Amino acid sequence: MSVQDHRYHRPAPGVDLQGRLSPFWRWLSELVWRLEHGFERARADARPEEDTRVRIFLILIVFSCVFAGLAIGASYKALFAQTSGRWSGANPNALVRGDLTDRNGELLATNIVHYGLYIDPSEIWDRDLAFGQLRRALPRIQPARLRKVLSGDRRLIVLNGLTPQEKAAVHALALGGVTFEPEDRRAYPLGTSAEHLIGDADTGGQGVSGAELAFNNEIRAAGERGESFPLSIDLRIQGVLENELAAAAVKAQAKGAVGIVTDVQTGEVLGMASWPTFNPADRGAAPEGATLNRAVAAHYEMGSVFKSFTVAAGLDTGQADMNTLFDASQAFQIGDRKIKDFHAQNRVMTLEEVYLHSSNIGTSQLALQMGPNTMRDYFRRLGLLNASTVELKESARPVAPRRWDNSTLASLSFGYGIMVTPAQVIQAMGALTNGGRMVPLTLRKGGLRGAQTPQVVTEETSRTMLDLMRRNVVNGSGGFADAPGLRVGGKTGSANKLVNGHYDPSHAVGSFAAVFPVDGPVTAKRYAILIVMDEPGAYPKTGAYVAAPAVRNIADRIAGFLGVQRQGDRWRTATGEKISQAGAPAGGAH
Image (cartoon, rainbow, N blue to C red; front, top):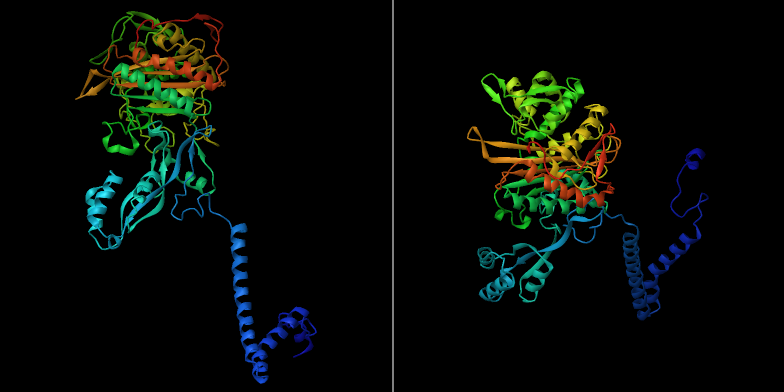
């Protein structure tokens, strides 16, 4: 080997560059040498007892090294090994799924350990006795399944999802061959509250409906980090909404009902309710239509609520202002069709009066004046021709007309001829009342970050609509929605349903779309409320009577949670005009 080769030759472990052994390796090699030759020395000196002691000593060294290695490895794992979420080490089959909470951290959904019941029939002495004992201890067990497992010859699962109490009852029987395996199950501590919105997850840890499905990957990722996933809803507002919606639905003898509360500036859903409710643990026993989230998946012709969108389009395009006149002295003729008013004034009215008296004739004339292109453009801008942006997978697309002829335009102007979801309506109302921006409706706390919020109407149009909605509550058809001191504005809506090709007055929809408080800058904090009553049985069936009172009660009860301050019983419009409070609908309660 050359000098250069030697220079770069790597020495053996424990050997320095000069070839000398380090002190530790020298000691270790001497120890091994003595052990290797200990047996020979003992035999040469005729001392077999030393031979035995040497062997014992060698075994002790080996076992000591093994146990020291195990102790070091276990300590390292316990102190430094990374975990994969809060469930690590507890149960290898645990659901990696974070808790679901409301915006304030209140629990909506979590994972709770349940147990699977397994039976090995070969270890059971008296199978008939075991059958009877298990049936008494666990009444919900299926007799056929239990009998099948007991009559078999191998270990099988009998029942999933035993609670700790059920497990204890079976365990107390002290039956041979009965074992339990832990399994995490999704639990919903609120019962029926917010059930349509929260949704459900399967036993494999995958969301199957509602927010559980919409945010499935993010909820699972939060669980792996040991965190929860917050939604935008506020449980206090959700509770009020459900309570008042159910009370109003029962009073109106409605087939179904919807309630939504949103923040119009951020698009956050603060509450969403669909009535009737059902027991999530027994979906099979739910009443017809109860499992449907009507807020995002049911279609309705909303009636005069759409006059807000028609009037806003007219104002925004400059086709009309508050003083523009419309002749409603007689029915409006389109071909062989006559359009009439629900509560006819039989006179010429300003655009403001058309809105306050909910004139179909006036809005039909305005729609025809704007034409199909303008109407279609504004409906598109307001999100009425596409599914709501809310993340729920159940969110349905509208049923929009294919032809936009004059007759269709007239119908669209007062909420007929197009079937939309309540979520679409409240999203569009938000755009009219937040300064004119289309803010996506969302269940994310804090709103949809980075979302595009295009200007769909001008701030001036938005301000005018806020004033007009307030006037409608004070002097128009929305008097029953007025909550003292909260400056509620809004629009009633009533529509007959299409049954067997004809609009049937006995199958109606009554609604009220509201916003509060309407005063202050257009960018001020403001909240929208939408109540829809599906097929009310009590008369009158109009939105002014079946939906507006619920809006008033909801606004009255949630104002404190939202920090909305009450003011006196008089309110000043943006133009400085004072308007006194009203106690009941004026003009046409439509």
